[in-house]
Length: 213
Image (cartoon, rainbow, N blue to C red; front, top):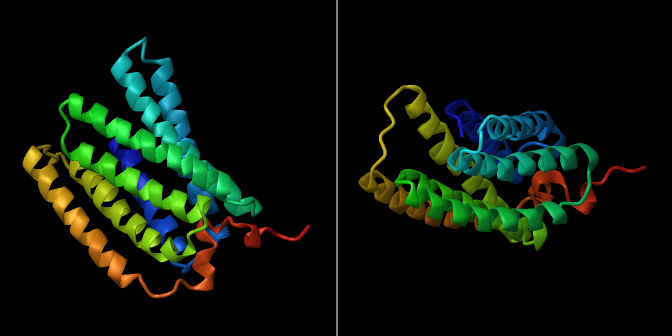
């Protein structure tokens, strides 16, 4: 994933997290979801076409589709009001795939992005629970985690890389993992109060959000 692409992933995670908190409407998130989703589909396609059989490039490109399809689906559902169960079950697939990409990243020598891939796996698992299984009580927690991950797993790494000060290390990965786990615990207790009705229509796309004919 390019550093610029990662920056916009951070932006859309933050926006969708705010949506899950019930602050903005599903329709308000449609343009950015469609923009980032399209970018995350077009870029990997170009990468594959120009990879000339390079397995590493193809593997990296394949990971981008997981998120590109997610954001396009969120954008389409937000615009149409279609139900979100399908998106939820696709999110379970993304969660498992992200664990696989974490293992792959470990074999290539990356350390911080192993933690980041695992964090994404946990977030998409939450999307599955909220959207696929209808666990509305997890909506606010999922939104808060999405915002935190948008900042910590995307905006900050992309900013460091664009500034030329990114440095991968096992120590940094360990610190990030511990800090992330502690933050998740804090967010869990902060968001335990009942979710507002607006946020229970997570990512805006449950049956109740379907517009009248």
